[in-house]
Image (cartoon, rainbow, N blue to C red; front, side, top):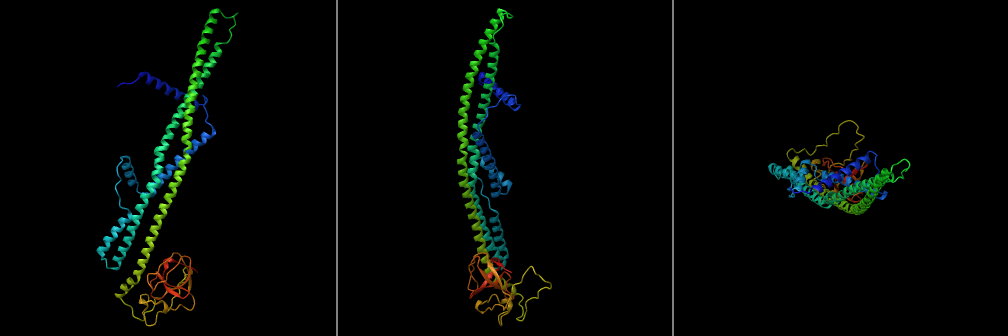
Length: 403
């Protein structure tokens, strides 16, 4: 194996010289060249950016993929430069199970139909989650990771070089101080009455040697100062580029928020649509349940348990329609025939917009106030709502009942 012995010895000498200088600085036995305040602020800002970028990156990865085993697998695939295998999201897996259960229970049964509808909504939620994870990875995680693995590594490398240049500079300064002190001692004027001529000659020779040593140390100091200044300027330019990094990360953060907002909006719309579909099924489910054990036409609503419940105000109930059993009052509801109770109606604030599925329902607008009451035997998830001359069924989940 070929190697340069002289270069190896020179590198070892430089290493030990720097190690000695660094140790003496830590022990307070050597002076240290201080950087200017602006440079120190740039260094502190860069370190702060690196630390918080790492934390934000790691926590965002946890948010997008809570499973630690899956994160480790993705990391290994990324390091091996291989494509990460596609995974089924939890929502899509739940949708698959619900569809299979509906086939076993019977797609035509109320439970089977509901499983199919809910499973379809879960599939949409899983697909939206997959798109959000993909978008967030490209627009947010990748720029943060590129900064840590690219720009920051370059900055760290140049900072290490600058640290070595500073140690070399301080070592040259210490060597020059020692050479000047020895030269001054050697050039001191001897006392000819007490010093022999031979000693005078030796003193003059030593003075000349130390003078050469001082000139050599000064030359090395100038060279070390030049290299230090050049490296300091390179490092300063890289550190000042942190500002542009912040601007880039700010743009990526906006894109991440937009992707997350779009994801939650899709989830919200999917669940609203699911609520409407399940609401339209409620009358059918009640009719199917009651067909197995019909109640007599004269059946009255179940009695309320004794005991005051002040914290849960009741909804006023209007009498049943003439000649129509209370158990099927909802399925044949004609809003124009329903009369509100004489007193005790309640006000309710609409929480979300609601689009009526048919003529028996009342369309709602968010934040509006309506009057509500209930019919005997009516599905507890629905109320009768009034707005002026308009009447119709409204879902309870869209309302905030006011006392």
